Image (cartoon, rainbow, N blue to C red; front, side):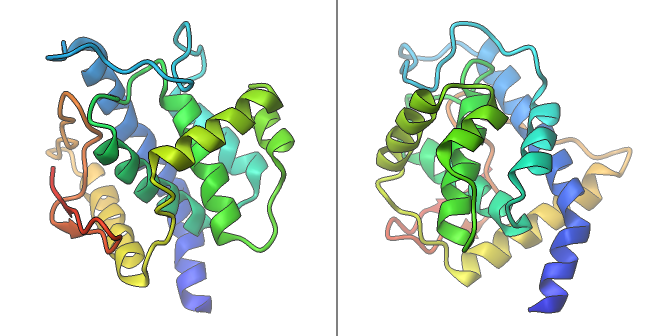
Length: 201
């Protein structure tokens, strides 16, 4: 397990870069793409776009949350599951920051033996404790409380992220395009949750 943890530590900044680039593209795509039906407005939706970029926000979470590197992979799995269960809830510039801080919070609580409380995460995320509590509950219900991530799913997501990080560094690589409704998802990743989704780009 030590080798895996060491590999994750080295991978972590690249994971943040990839996730921020991916989510930036998803948010911008959904900002511009008209939906067939009005998008669902929820507690994650802000009145305006935050001034902080997605990458800077993720780096801030990484710096202050002190959660394990695995948490960011699991948070990505959770975001993936969330958008699959919420087809009328596109990730966009108005909700992506709140979704990020909430997914990392939930992941840390599920994955780590020691983690900060909601008040601390609220400060890191730039929101109130009451809002953080509300976001956590809404996110859990949005996931259908499907929090378990099997080793197979975890390692498959890690492999996907590592591949994409390498490809991102290629001058001819084009980042995955987001659909108009959902976050772009890993190609042919089988999520071993009870829903058994076959994820696709």
